[in-house]
Image (cartoon, rainbow, N blue to C red; front, top):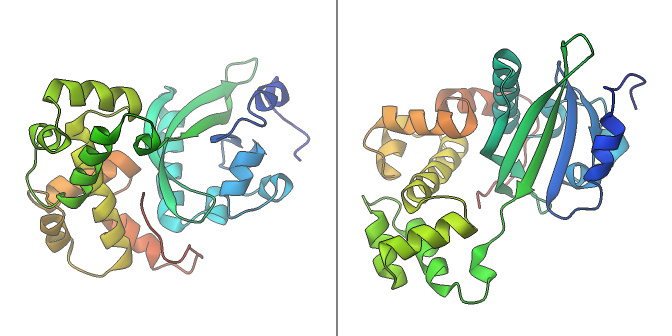
Length: 249
């Protein structure tokens, strides 16, 4: 473990030990992990905490994911503003990829100089398993089944057998997304998968995934991951290791 840690770092890390589905990490300004909890280490290809310390995202995650994390860190460092409720892709315990909600903040020394980035990520729960949420489960399944179509929140509500207003309330409460944003997110998930796993033209992938054109798809992917689709493919062609059979959940 590094000898020099930001003041109060150990106390901060202790807060997140033993909490299920919550990952904590502390990086220096060069991207090296200074502290992580066990939940984070488990997501990093099943490594131990000591194996993660001193590594970077490039050492632990697929290139396309490491790129997005680095882009987000750079934005925090350059702006000085924290990231709040950012949806991002992180590796789950079984090696698949899932959506997490992440907060990131800068830590400063006594002179006000940034010295580290603290991040907390929470695994999104699956509302389909909650009692009485069958309608919401149907809405989510409909969004995944019909992502190629120009569907609307009203279409999801109709499939779920509830009013659009009720669907809005339930989705905001249990998923943290409006129905319209869910539809976009599902398209983005599928587009990312196809960009990474195939060499098809980006314009074709955009149409196949329900976007109006390649530019619209690129904007949404960059908004979600912080990098453009072309950058994902560049990362894929590097020699860095990456998980096999990637799935987006």
